Image (tube, rainbow, N blue to C red; front, side, top):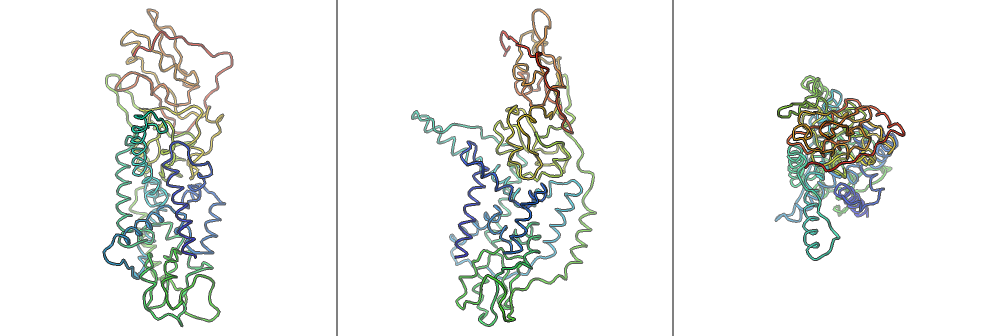
Length: 507
């Protein structure tokens, strides 16, 4: 019964959160967005006290239930392991392995120290939810979209427009490679050893494992009934049951309950301690604490502390311009706030309706690799859209109302007259002014009856509408310079609005 309940809950939660990343048409109800906010690292970085209290209480009561059913990467490993069992020629059996205690605590120390010195990139690599989010966004979603586009092509051919084609380009080659490497490493370890990744690399598993040692309900062994047959160990995907010693390492047990049904002697049960002093669950000794502290010290010395240096450069041809500061998403407050809170789960990137959010490479410095950044090659930030700040589970993007979004200045408009088509080709354009939602770009008389853009950076919000639509190639005549710290744009004075007329767009 316990195993069946665990499987049902795991499948439901995994399917929902995976489809939440894939869903581009809003099929899922809004309450599905709560699942990313139930993840441990996002709740920790976002200081979600309620979520942390729930997860810690759940762990203290039932052990690593979070790892068992709530963490999508954990369930993903179970799915891989299940396929391995079904396709293996020989019956797949697990066996007890000693805990890699030094490695486990060293990875936790590495993540914590990296976050403290501003290398959030490493913390994001180790966080299981963020790792799965990148896999869902950059591996699963392109496959899902390709299937949708194929159906759209077929259905449209027969006059049915139920499906529609959407863009399916690669957002970032480097992030795609990282996502594929994650699939390869996690998939291979799960295929061979079940929850190996959870119990050797994952910092969340290590921390929750520490609490699981004192959890109220545990898988317990009745030493009087146990005949050391190892049937339970053969079913344990965490390799934490030592049948010979009649012990279970609760710091690694993910309460999957696979072992309970395997015991013909009824020597295993999940619950409170038995009244008699039978040999129950024991854990690995803490003799490696000094080794852990030594490893943490070495890690702290090895990681450089000045790695968040801004290195964004965009160079044009004849009239070169340099974007000094990358444009961080609305609600990020500043590049520094984003660096401290974002673990690059890429939920915002996956859900952005205009596809202006893409993973950064070195624009934020090495500490901010893979964090979301605004790019305007294929779209611009919708003036009324607040989706990314609504769904962020880490509080890296704080919630913005529509009114707040209207005055959040992510960047300021910069106009390069030397390469504008009005100046170089003597033709009317006006596309940038037409697409500016705040009138930060307007058209004024130029010469020979032409009008040219005029900018007011104080009322610009940095949405990128002008930069996206500018016909000049390869580098735009008008672009957005990012604000390191987001500002509040001035509001348009009432009565100052202008009605602009254009003969044509000149392209």
